[in-house]
Image (cartoon, rainbow, N blue to C red; front, side):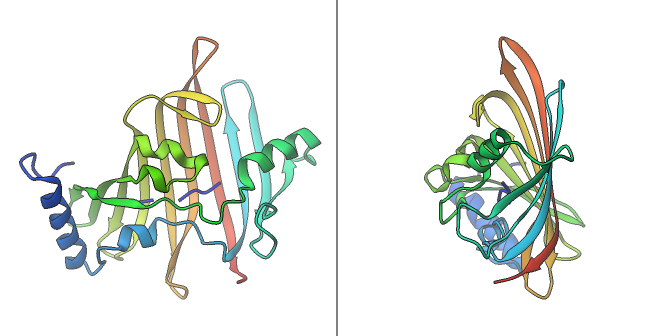
Length: 230
């Protein structure tokens, strides 16, 4: 699942309200507006057909899943798994995939808490904002993001979001995994004609406790050939 996102503290003496005001002023200065993060760090809102490739490695095996997403069919059937490591998926693999991806929730996007905004970086080329999601707004699959700090990177040259990074603030649980360290990076592409962002690549790296051992799990999700169909 693609997930969905989007500022180093400006000054420790600022109140939360003061930080929000400073970030909002900066967003306005760059012509982005206060709703930029919520409007940019969203899923495609089910308007595009696209193909995906998900590669998972836990140090013992490498699994490559390929297929497509089609918003023209009912919710719960839109993610279609075509192959696993080049072969047709088994019934067990299909069941596991559908449980993970074919959510029936009408909204899979979390809401950014604008009171969590702080400026992470402000250079000649990059403006970056630290933020957090509102816990109650996150769907079950992405509930773990409530315990992470996100950073949205905005190019000053283009005025567009380029990358969102997430790092956990404490141990958490992702799917079946007890995670001690998490790093998730999402790269975005801006579609000029449609004036919207689509996710191009999502990289997830987790340090996981399994049977008393610390294991690294890596998942790379790539999305291509976006085509607006609705």
